Length: 99
Image 1 (cartoon, one colour):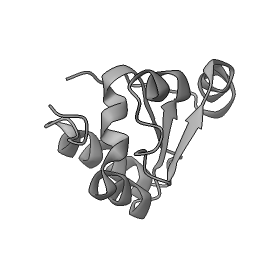
Image 2: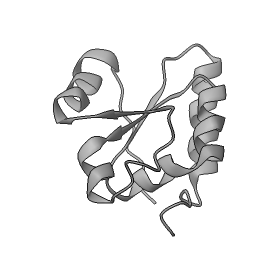
Image 3: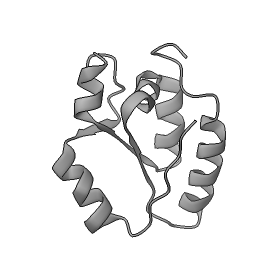
Image 4: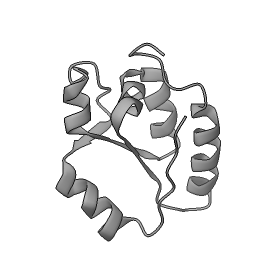
């Protein structure tokens, strides 16, 4: 996978997330480690934005991969403290996805 290409299984993530969003669930995706590469794809990010699914990326991982300038503007970069807030304060359920 090059740095501008989302994971091949992003379609299944989108299907699951969009079905939950259609039911009124508040859905957010947090990209960490190499998943941050997907946040550079306008097609990928736009698809989630249109489905009202927020996309976050861990700033430290974006910076470590030198993707800051290429990250799509709809992606919110967060730090570790904000990550904990997402988990503890804003979203009751967490699904971890790896490829």
